Length: 174
Image (cartoon, rainbow, N blue to C red; front, side):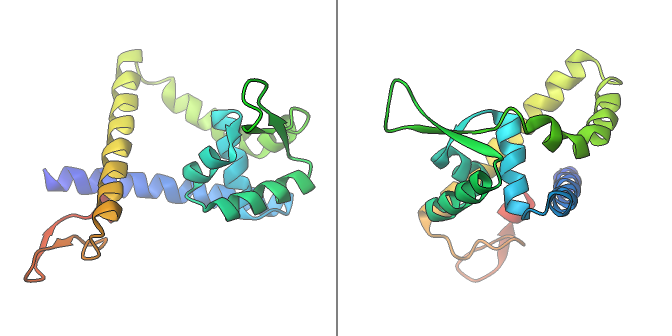
């Protein structure tokens, strides 16, 4: 069972690394930073977001998000819109006239990914989607519990008991 978990962890880590590598290449193409590209990707995938939501999605502090949004605005890539019902809330979204240009470097990746998706049944895809959602939620819940409890002994290699012995696989692998 641990072997299955480690294989899934390895594969998800490999996929995350490949996606980050793609973000680095896109960043170079547009002369942007990787964080800016990650924000663009997140806004494309999620649609308009508040600064707080964007910060949580990218694991950034509020100050970092503020600076990020300013950089994206300076490059005319995003726009800020005040919420009509709650004027305290501001939505950040990709500029509609920039989406096609920003999407261009991803078209071959999207096509290749779609060819993989097309080989799976709707039931298989529903299972994969459910698994990924639950796996992400479990990993996130573990990370939050570790932060909340102030467990400084939880290392990527595992948790340690009072004697210092590793007792389980930590958040770094799950």
